Image 1 (tube, rainbow, N blue to C red):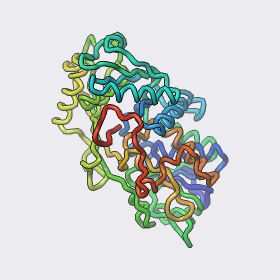
Image 2: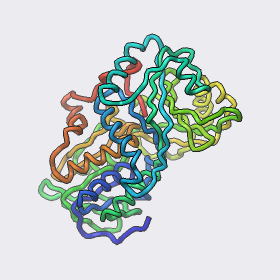
Image 3: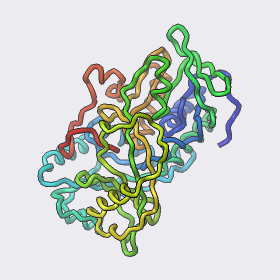
Image 4: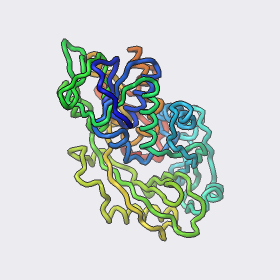
Length: 400
């Protein structure tokens, strides 16, 4: 993507060229806001590029369901909206419940139905008819969302960024931010590596794991922990058949989805935010052999045919995790400063709608009602997002 000359002034500056920064810049530009998007490396090159990019609607809280549902609708029309492809593929989503979790399972289905999600309750036999390689012997019921799918995370961030440029935004790659200028309690600009400053009265920090470092000099603290996540790719064995659907297996602790035509992407869950990292940067993003074998073994318990799969590599990444595993999307600190951080592994799938709402907040100075639950102060006020239909019954946050 070509980098234009750096403007001296903008109506708003978005820091971070991941899927959230790019989405917010896209929606601001469509509102006619003169926006600059700054990315220290290349668009989609940070945590976004490591995303499993699963797009689902099955959430345990109403705010999660609503944001996911509207985001899924956007992914279906991504090309019409942005002029670019995100390579969205509809696969469907399956997740099963054992006998002890049926009450929680039915509460979850009730929540989804109340929000207009067309999720089906299947018997194990019906689930196996849809997914012949699935071992559903321990399931009593299965939820099926036929509209779920996945996309290419780098293409998605790039699509938002190119759409923003079409609407007049300046997208600058290789533009590392050195600090946010403040005078008399108001944002006045963004200092960029090389000594340049872009004057602006509105700054949106959507820099993922780098966000706490950028906020710290402004005496703005966010309750973020860094948690490593691992993903591996397995080549489906001969005779496996059609690509599998997305599957969340809460009992063996894996999520999986097809990866293009021949592979399966597998990640681990739950990820406990209490088992955090001190820093967000990984010295090595490769996946140890022991973790590859563990994820492979756990997936094969649910899909026995995958015991004959061939490992095809993998990668490690870092989640920015809040205490309730929902993001902070709010105005914080000095006037004119906004933040979107702590997406806790949910970020990719919610990015279209959260980016739209944040752009509305920035452009109008009025917080949309949909963002009320994601205020920064909720933890101090002991008003964190709580599952309305937790499934299965669990002790702590889980990802993605």
